[in-house]
Image (cartoon, rainbow, N blue to C red):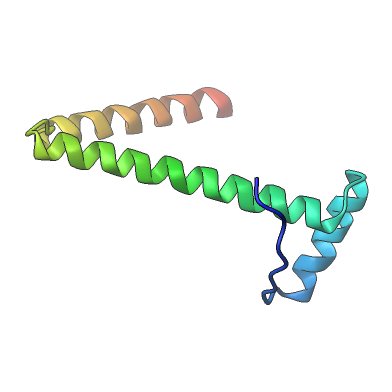
Length: 90
């Protein structure tokens, strides 16, 4: 791992207050939380890029899903969601 470097950026004051409150509750400092946030962001972006690359490779190889099949999948998800909501409100 390379040595830490200092960067600066603008952030609204209320976010700093929230960050400091959370840091205090976690017995951590602001820098620790910001480093964690950046690491989580980078991991998520890497994951998304990998998914996109996988999809592009599949597309280039002709491994595609027909529009009608996608519509059926989406409809089934919507039905599951409606069923689950109905169960939780009953």
